[in-house]
Image (tube, rainbow, N blue to C red; front, side):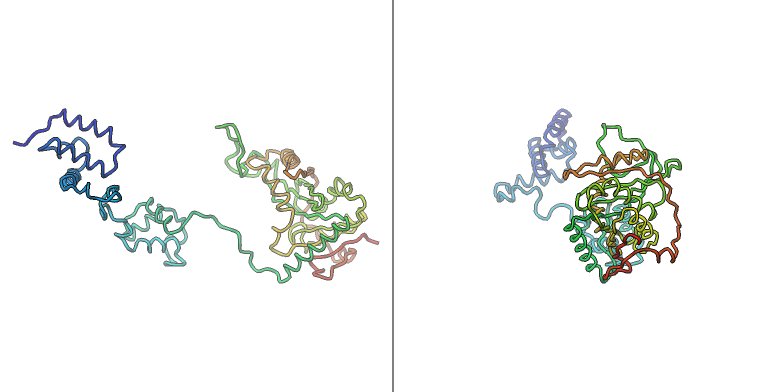
Length: 412
């Protein structure tokens, strides 16, 4: 009759294994089970397997290793090996040699695979990639897809703005011209400003990108949908940055972003800040983008500048940046970046909130921004006639004077 192991021994083995299990690796677990089976004698393999859940074949392998005395003859490096060389499940890529090529074709269909691939126009998540591979006969999970993508050198990445498209042949020459003009104005102690309109912002308890420190579990509550509040509407910040004094002015407009609004912002800067910083100024240089309310082709921009010149008695020179180079305008990274940083994660609940957030900007350089709310209405669609343009006292520069560089002087 077969030898029966008592329930007490089985229970004791189970408790012992529970205590040691977390400290044993695969090899030491196999050898421990084998020593317990040898100690029990006949029926020990079955008893240990029943108490621990270890497969009987694994325990027998351990017994053979102990009986053959291979442990003492192995090198230190081999003694540390958990499994014997070549043991264990083969890698999925070894069993399925076409898996890598199939996955690569799905991720980059236009470069390495079929341009009509089903995933060409869908979000290539690891689950969708795994589903498509399974449809092609490859047995794989989404977690393994993620692991393989890492090994293949793929990473989750966003888009990067690097392509500027075709550039104007005189682009670099215009940059050099602007640099020389700015340098000559500064050497003469005359003001140079960089101007531009920041993007429009919705007013109200709406979500704003970014994060701010708040008490834990008490984030700022905002609306679910970012629909414009018809009462509060939008605001348009128009900025003026003084390159020499490193100071700025922002007019917060509530109407259209027109050339009238742009020139009015420059007028307010001159009256509040510019005339005090440059009491002996006889001329002013403006660097601006080539489009928008202060665009090089905007007739109303030049007409309004003529009015400002006549009021102040100082001539105004304008240098426009070539098309597609607005990011080089100083105001973009010297002033607007600080404005965006200061109101990140905060809902712009009112016009006054916008004014206060801009006015309270502080930097390590110690410079400041003055701001003011402009409640005037600036209608769009104003046409400037040829007769009005002929009355302008405008002097084109020798270099691109018909579009980029010109000076407006007081009317006779």
